[in-house]
Length: 224
Image (cartoon, rainbow, N blue to C red; front, side, top):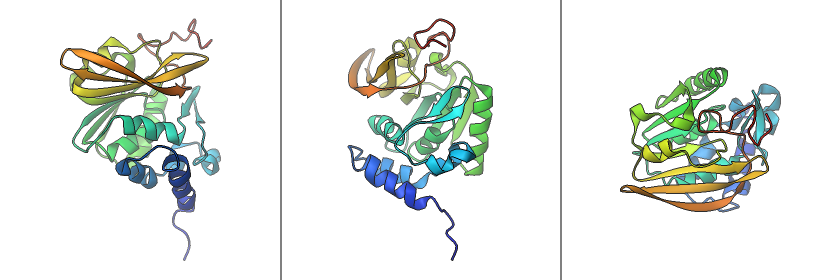
């Protein structure tokens, strides 16, 4: 019989070697990463590289994050299945598709309209119904649907934007990379009542966050 998913074996190896073989231990995260086909979220001429241990370009100077980083950020959010999640930086839609399997509702904000439309099309093709992709300035969050049990930012900010902290539900997590062109630190903020606390997790490298509270394209440290 012809193989219905020729990249299924590569996806399984990705999960076992790049994720479970490191420090991704949340079984729900591992199962979601095993189920969602990353290859449909990358340009067709790069599908054979979809399960490599690296980010890949998706156009407009943006990337789809390394699988391990996607899994790590989602694991840090400690999702149980009933949460409302905000994603800042839809990109290809891959992380939103993973989140859709792990939370009740996902709102995803993308600065670049063409990427937002492409992500909507792929998510619809996969039958994902609990993700709403919005075009806008994600650095300011999406207050109309707040509070959020988790906020994940898939682009580097100069600092954690205050509106994102304010839109967290009590005990909610904000996970984002903070830093400049030469690298960032992945941070996890947690809201408890009126205060927030910060953990610094690990070094990462992301494209810059666009928007009012991100890096300005013309004169930011990324040299755009």
